[in-house]
View: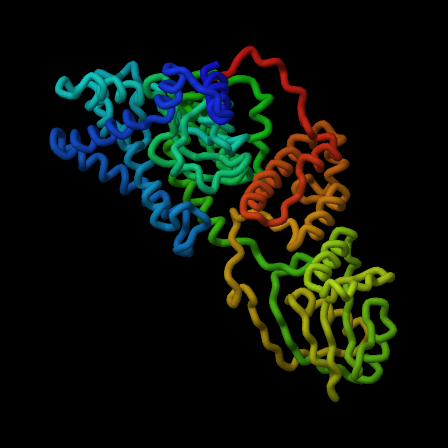
Length: 527
C-alpha cells in the first residue's frame, strides 16, 4: 500500500493542504535520486581508479551491446530513427547508459548473458558485486550496490496513467509484476497513456526507481517486444531441459500482451527472474528493431493496397474510336471533356465519404456551403486521354496498368504499350514515420465523422470484423481493447499538442468497453 499512501499525500499537497514534517520528508525521499547518482559515481571511480582491469570487461560488453543494436537496425537504417526526447543525441546517451548498467551485472565468463544474483554475491566477479563487497567503499554505497543486484528487474513497463502522482504505476507486460515507481522528469517527455517503458527498475532504500534511462514504446510496440521475450524464454527453457523444439514462426500480429497480462495468472518468481534476464539481454535488439521499423515508415499504397507508382503510359489499340465507344458504355468508365475517359473503382465507404466531406468543409469558405453529392461516390482509378493511335493512360500502380491492359484485351482492342514513365512518390516525400500519433482527422469535424462511423468499419486488426461485432464476441474483446488503447495513446498525444482528438471514453461506452473484463477483487497492490 506504499504507492497508494504516497498518492494520497500528493493529492493533499496539490490541494494546498499543509503536510506534516514526516509526510513532506516521505515525498522528498521518494523523489530523491541522490543515492542512485552516488552509486553511479562510486562505480565510475571504482573502475577508473581502483579496478582499471574492469574497463576491458565493460568496454567489450558495451561494444557488443551497441553492435547488436546496429544489427537490429539494419544497414539501411537512417540517421533519424523516430521520435525521441533530445533527438539522436538523447537516444544515444540513453542507450549508452543502459549498456553501462547492464555491463555492471556481468561476470567476465558470462559471455554477455549472465546476471549476478544475490545468493552468489560473494563469489561473483560482476563489477557491481565487486563494488558491493569491497571493504573500502562506504556502507551506504555497499548497501545500494547490494540492493541493486538483488532487485534489478528488466521489464516492459506499461503506464496506464502518465501523470505522476508523485510516481507511476507500472505493470510489466511480460510477467505481470506491478510496481509503484519514481520516474525522473527527464524521462517523462513524450510519455502517453498506455506507453510502455523498456528498461530496468531497482529498489533503493525501499523505493522502486527507474534507472539511468528508459526506451519509450507505443502499446503495439510493447506487445511486439513482449513476443520477443516470450519466444526467447521458451527457447531457453527447452534448451535447459534438453528438449528440442521447432522455432515458432513470427505472427503477423503479436498477442495483445498489455491487455492479457491483467487477467493472466501470476508467474512463478523463478520464471519472472528468467524473463527479466532474457529481456535485459534482448534490450538492444528490441530497441534496434523498433527504430528500424519506425525509420522504414509505412508504405504508400492506393485504395486497392497496391504500391503507389505514378505511371503515364501510351497504349496503342487497333481501332481507337471504336474502343473509346466501348469503354464509354462500360459501367466503370465515364466520358469527360475533350473525349477523355475517367476510370472508376469501388464506392467510398460511409466513413471515407464523411471524412472527405469534413476535409472539404475545413478548407472551404464559411460563406460558401459545400454541396453534398446525392449519388454514390467512387474512387478514381485512372484517366485515359485519346490520341490518334490509342490513349495516354494515367494510373497510380503497376497492377492498375496491367488490369487496364487486360480489360482492353478482353474488348478485342489488341493493346500495346509503346512508352511509359514512372514516378515513385516515396522518393520525393518525407518518410511517414511509424511511432507517431494517428491523425484521426484534419479537423474536429473529420474526427467526429471518424468516431461516428468507425464502430461499423471492418478493421484488419480485428480479423476483418467491425468493432461493434468484436465487442460482442468474448474472444475478440482483448484485441479490441488493444486497439482502443492504441487510440487512447494517440489521442492523449494529440490533445496535449492542442490538435483534434476523439472522445475515447464515449467510444468505449458506445461499444460497451468501459471494462473489457470483470476484474477480480484485489487483495492489495503488488508494490
